[in-house]
Amino acid sequence: MANKTRVSLTLDKDLVAKAKAAGINLSAVAEEAIRFETRAEEMRRWAEENKAALQAKARQIEEEGLWSDGLRMF
View 1 (cartoon, rainbow, N blue to C red):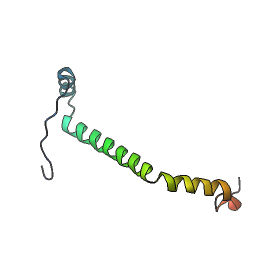
View 2: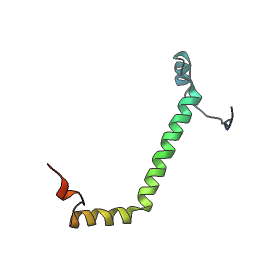
View 3: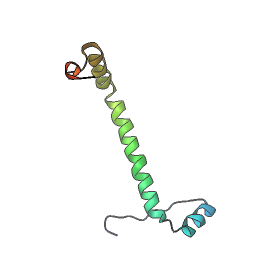
View 4: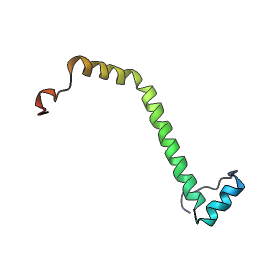
């Protein structure tokens, strides 16, 4: 259990019983869900922190087009 820490979670009793009966590893599922939600929050914060730059780039593309516009065959 390198680089792991114990935590206490409160979960629905019936759900835990069903998960155990199905052979689901609750720790692995919880870890993956926390990883997913953490990444989503990091992405949301990044987009918020860089909102002005993203909007400026979108305006530039709208005004000037993309560098590859003249190269497209479609």
